[in-house]
Amino acid sequence: MPLQNRVTPEGDIVALPARGTFMGNRGGCFHTPRQELTRSRWKSRAWITCVLEFKNRHRELMQPGLYTELFFLDEVTALAAGHRPCFECRRGDANAFFAAWDASGRAPPNRRAGDMDLVLHAERVGDRRSKRTFRSRLDALPNGTMVRINDESYAVMGPQLLAWGPDGYTQGRPYDGNRDATVLTPPTTVRLLQAGYCPHIHKSATDLVGDHRLRQA
Image 1 (cartoon, rainbow, N blue to C red):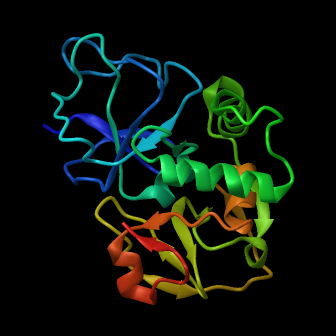
Image 2 (image 1 turned 90 degrees about the vertical axis):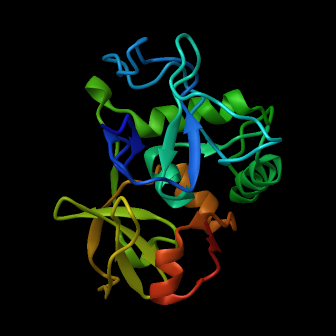
């Protein structure tokens, strides 16, 4: 049986056999010695997204007392779930994330990762630890934003919405920009996408509609 360590755009952690293109964590350990999740779904506000390979490091997954490794289809999925780039293994992307925050005009005053995490955590977790969302017209959302329509997750990509799946994006469909949708990506992250941050999206998306200024994962 696969471990319960794959993250959906809704921020849920599920057991799926598909391998992601990014990993990450939520600030520490919330699994048992039997490699099962506890009732918690994070340890701290530091929800980060990491590369799969870094300095030839190798890990046994879900070791007792060490952080709970999580996996994402791509960075677009991780951003929707409320994660940000890691400052160790993805320093260039993390700096670009901060630069976009500066460009948005709403950067934390001290430019510290902890200040960023404080803002993001308030936007991703609602009452009773539910996923916090907001409504927006589709034509107001930048590429790389994730939305929910009829209980399905879609990525905004150029002129189309791409249906999210654990193995990739399965189809694209044109959309009416005047239509409202439930936005899964936190509002601050949406502003950073608008300000120029360019996330990685799964190859299946670029196969469907081209790059549209996003990087292929």
